[in-house]
Length: 336
Ligand code: SF4
Ligand SMILES: [Zn+2]
Image 1 (spheres, rainbow, N blue to C red):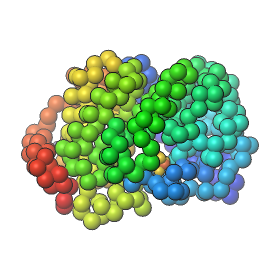
Image 2: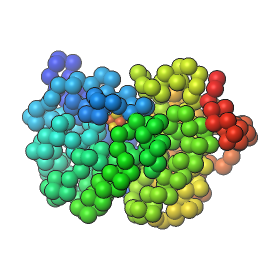
Image 3: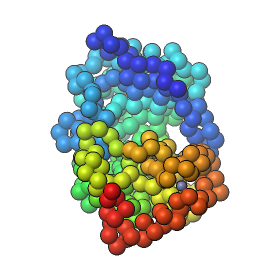
Image 4: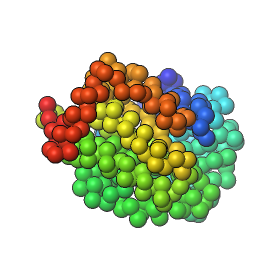
């Protein structure tokens, strides 16, 4: 439910978007208020940019004043109805002072804390911007501050070569340690099916990454984000050339099922596939997509593998045989 939009008059007093959605905290379904702030966007995307990211295609790169940012937050919080979870996105890193100056970060979280003192607040950041002093300063205004890092893969080779993320696992681990030591909560995003890995290789990478995070940061949350094709990206060019297919939903189900069995209660796994069931997002044959997505949504709340969908006759067998081919010829399931 989208309940807000940016100004058309050149001012930047409104967020790019505000909506409400379902999410989970501690194994129960909760309502979440989500806002995308209208800031200058990701610094990394200006320098190099990740192969799959089109978040900054239409971003106004000019800086935004603290006053404008606070007006945006006020606009979003006017729609707050005691949701236990508030998510702040910036199409970049909330903790990057080039995007949002440190004082403005504090003013924003303090404003949200005033209106929603018992809600959990999520922000996102690349690890190089995470500092313990700033986290401690932000943490005191809200009940829980959750910081999400888009690690994408625990493999430095895959992250550098296929995603172009520009930081290492040890930088991620350093940032994650600071988050936990500051009394904040860690959430990690993993990317299912970076380009050129193939269906089988990408599932192996996701499973290995979940196991690595479980070993380093038990008790944290992981969102497995299957690739969606965003405009004007390297991945879109592969897609257009018939060399890339977003992952099958069965691949996501298998990663969640196997990893949950192995990590048990150590990790809360979730997934909310952007463009799920569509050609540009994770999809199956079209007949079973809705039921499979609904099972994934239920599992993301309960973390009970019994909630994951059972194989469906329409395309499970086809997926299994494509998967086997992609073990030998990684891109065989991608070519169209
Ligand atoms: S994925 Fe994140 S770090 Fe990479 S370019 Fe996009 S916003 Fe920046
Ligand atoms: Zn199907």
